[in-house]
Image (cartoon, rainbow, N blue to C red; front, top):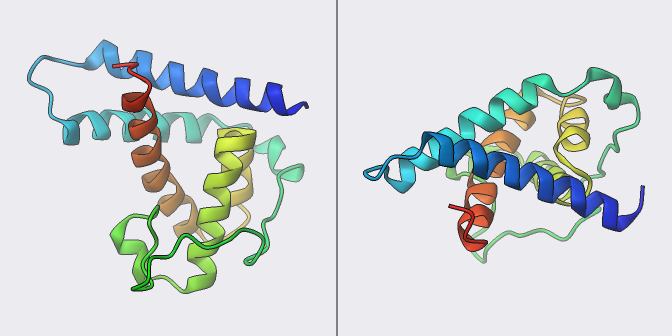
Length: 141
């Protein structure tokens, strides 16, 4: 799959999530409520990921991507509760976020399923925040 096709997959996922959010958006909806709608939609998409993809999904090595930790040791992309996880698990989730943004949600979810279930949970929460921000930045709401 070409780089252009990979990014096209991500763009389609972002637009589909934005469409779903717009369909449920009300005038008084707060950003917290909008994030929850994104989380729910993302959760449904993650449940539908074809398990057969997992054989082809990359298994990121813990040091394959530069860390996004802040000087205090906290990750800039992960939810706060993830700071209690071992650093190796934090790095794995950060790498899977990168996979999701470059290769699509299905590949990242399939990769996350190879590890402890907490990896998929943190990936879900981190992607919900990241995708919500991307939707807002692009003016899709």
